[in-house]
Length: 128
Ligand SMILES: [Fe+2]
Ligand SMILES: [Fe+2]
Image (tube, rainbow, N blue to C red; front, side):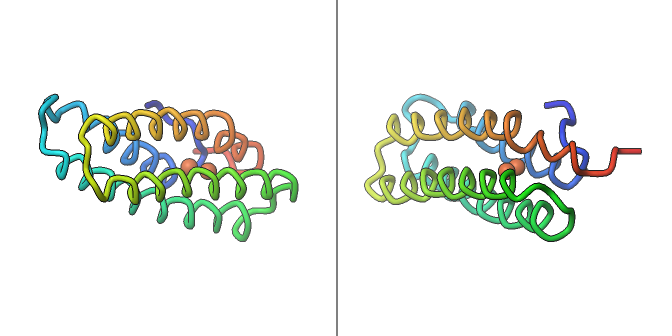
């Protein structure tokens, strides 16, 4: 994914998370569901840490409109819950179900990056 956010750390996080989610395609159809679950857990770690880092940037480091901050935080809470629920549901691993979850998490995160994270550019200093 080409750069979209005026903060190289955020961009790097986004590409790590999306690449991780895409790596499920490298696992064959009959892959051990535990491998898919391990991948999902890794995604969870990255997403949770990334959201905390991003919230620091849009809440503390730069001044952004309160409505935007609230909306962005609510989106994080909702996506984080989806990811946490997916990890919990994958306790009893079922490969195709976990794969489906990874696909929908990817779709959701990509949409969030383009529709919500991208709005931060209005308030971040331009990249040199
Ligand atoms: Fe983000
Ligand atoms: Fe975000």
